[in-house]
Image 1 (cartoon, helix red, strand yellow):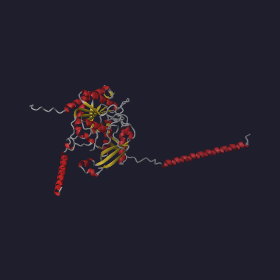
Image 2 (cartoon, chains in turn orange, green):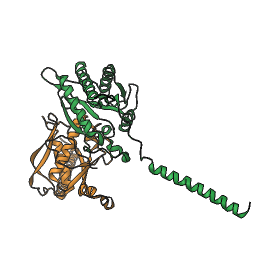
Image 3 (cartoon, rainbow over the protein chains, first blue to last red):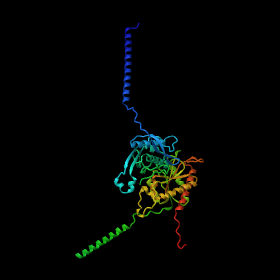
Image 4 (cartoon, each protein chain N blue to C red):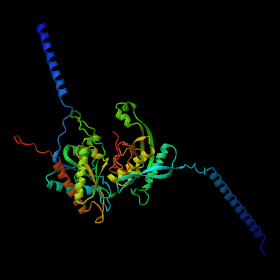
Length: 218
Length: 251
């Protein structure tokens, strides 16, 4: 015969277990609601899809030492600076693919691209017609990532080809850009990886199928 | 001393000062704006082994740094050129612990007045030998004697035409020595400031059937390269040396 106090204790414990179970279920339900609410606040709607468009990339080839234009279908943002950054990032990404003709390490490469209207100083531009002609349009300032420059293969040819490839791509897709300068992590750097000069202002020209060295501005 | 004597003395002093001043001004007007550029020494060759000191240059694999290979190549080339009667100036020696700047290399070159400047480089990218000249535009007319002041960054400008000829000679000689070479232009810092016919030669691995992936640290590759460069410099010295003036009285 079970004593009365034990039966009472049994029922009390059973009710307590039931209450705790209900409390936990309620807590789980609240937590789920909380998460669901937060998820609803997050803008899960996909961004407006940019239409794919045909862009021209100036792709370098180490074997021939030349730059060749190639077309790609890419979705790019509309603002010009973001567009240039996305385009150059795509260009460098091409070189990280397997069996690339100009192999570079994968990873972030271009931080920003800025466009500055030329001439920078009107007084200097009017000194000679040559200067005025050579500086009409825009100057593109390409801010490369330090990690990209640090891990770039070292050599005159390979560095010159990378520079020519970037210049050729800008030439093909941004017709107003007349000149280009390179900075690394926002600062001037002497060379890309020990050879190609990054302190100069390069003239934006068609670098396809000719000697790869980009032209300098006077 | 009376008043007349004082007046005459002052007049004399003033006229002397005016005469001296006029002569000084005339002398300054007649003086050239700069000293004429000295002629290059036909027997001096400048070799610039790339990198050095704390700057190892490219990693060529097997723990071989570009700075060591370029210096070894320059040392071999110096020996071969000395045997041919050249005086060789190196921009750095083996004991240099600090990395030379491009400006320091160009200063060494420009002070030596060499007949040719060769900057040596090596890489793991690409294949074969590549001879680079400055990407500066070719200047058709030499600068006027009064305008000898040139911009440091574009000092090579008036030598680009000669550099292109020299690069072609190097390419041909390397080909004769069994190394396929290409010529191109590049913006490499020391070249643009050198006032001599200047080229940068970059040695990539050889990817031929006989020698697959042979780097410039290979002794036979180096020997061929030295042979080709010596032949090019000997030819360059012969081609660019002005012919001796005819003796007086000869028909």
